[in-house]
Image (cartoon, rainbow over all chains, first blue to last red; front, side, top):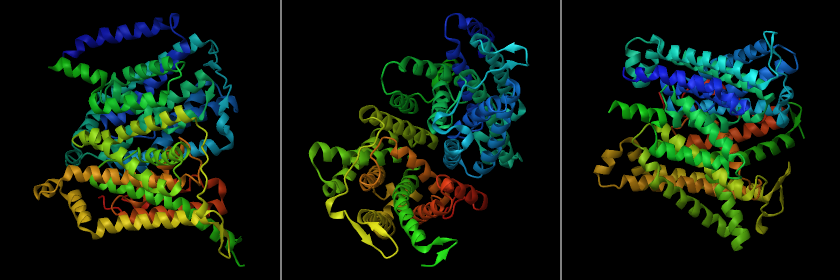
Length: 307
Length: 295
C-alpha cells in the first residue's frame, strides 16, 4: 500500500487546516462545507461502495433537518436530543425507501428513490409544522450537553467538526470492514455474490440505512448551525448536487466526496454574488464530468499514482 | 343527478375528464421515456426539460416571429427533436459503452443547464400563451362545460400516442427498432444502420416531448420549472407501468391522470402525492411494474 505513506501526513495536514481555518474563513461557510462533505460521503457509501445510485438522498438530509428544527424549536429539546431525533427519522425513512427501492435494480432504483423523495418534498410543502415556503426559521442552537453555549458560531463550528470527523471515521470503518468488502463484491458482480451465498438484498439495505442515517446527521447539524429548515434541503436539486459532489471528487474513494463537496461549496460561494446562473453552471460541470472526468479528482490522482 | 360517495356524478365525470388532460401529458412523456429506454438504455432525465423547451419555443416563435399555434404544432417538435438528435450524436452516443447510470447523470446535468439558462433569461414567472382562436369556447357535454381546447389536447395526444404505437408494432421500421432492442449487433450485421436508428429514435421521442410542450403552452403557464415538476411524476408513472410495453406506458399515463383527478375531488390535499402512493403500492405487490418484464 504505497498510498498509505501519504495518507497519514495528508489527513494530519487536512485536520490542521480545519482546526485553524475559522481564523481566516467564515465559520458558517466551513460548517456548510463539513455538513455537505459528510452528506456526500454518506451517499458515496451506497453509490461508490454498493453501486446503488440514489437520486433521493435529499429526503434524508432535509427530512432530518425538519424534524430536528421542529424538535428544537417547538418542543424545546436540547441540541443532542433534537439531532438524535432527526437521525432516527432519517434512519426509519432510509429503511422504508430501501425496502421499497431495492426491489428494483440499477436505473429503476434511481427513479424509485427520486420519486419517493419527491413525495417527502410535497409533504414538506403541505404539512402544517414545516411552514411551507417559509420553512422553520429561528431554530434555537441551545447548549451542548447543557454546558457549552452554541450561540457562538466558532464554538458551533468546532462541535460540528468533531461530530463530522467522528462520522467520517465511522464511514472509514464500515468501508474497510468485512461488510465493506461484501459491498464491493456485490458492486463488482452481483450474480457471483448471490452464488457465494451472500444475502445481497440485506447487505444493500444495511448500507442504504447507514447512509440515510449519516445523511440525516449532516442535515440536522446544518439546520442547527444555520437555524433554518427550508424546502431547498429536500429538493431534487440537492439530491443531484450531492451526486455531483461525489462524482467530481471520485466515486468509490474515501476522500473523493470530501474534496468534491469542498470544491462545489466553494464554487457556489464564489458564484453566489456573480449574477451568473448557478444551476446552469453546475449542470454544465455535471455534463463535462460525466463525459471526460468520470474518475473525479481523487480517483484520477490514485489512478495516476498506480501507473 | 345521482350521487356516488356523496359526490354528484357531474362533478365526478368533470374531474375524470380534467384528469384525462393531465394523463395525456403523462402518456406522451412516459411513452417517449419508455421507447428511449428500450432502444438506448438511457433514462432521459432531460425529457421534462425538452417539454419545457417545446413550450418556450412555441412562445418564442409566436412573440418573435409571429408564428401562430398551428404552424408551431409542426415546427416546434421538429426543432426540439433536431436539438435532441444533436445531443445524442455529440454526447449520449459516447456513453453507451459505460454504465447506464452515467447517461442518466448526463441528462440530469443537461436538464439543470436548460432549466437554469431559461430561468436566467426569462425569469421564473410564467409567460402566458393564448388559446388558438379556432379552439376557444366551451363544449356543453350535459354534465359539464369542457373548454374546447382541453378536449383537443386529449384527442391530439391520444392520436399521436396511438400512431407511435402503430409505427412501432406494425411497420417494418418498427420491426427493425424492436429487433435492434433485442440484439443490436445482429441487426447491424443485416446491414441496418443501428447508430442512425438510435439517433432518429432519440430525436423522435424528444420531439414528442416538444409536441407535448406545444399542447401545454395555452393551458399551463410557460415557465422554466414546468418540466422538472412534471418529469418526476412521469418517472413514478414509468415505475408503476414498467418499461416493458409501449401500450402499457400510454394506459398507465392516462389512468394515473384520472386517479389524480378523482383524488382531487375526494381528498384534495393528497392529490399531489397520490401517484407516489400508487407507486409504493405497486412496488410492494408487483415490483416489476404493471406491464413490466424485468425479472
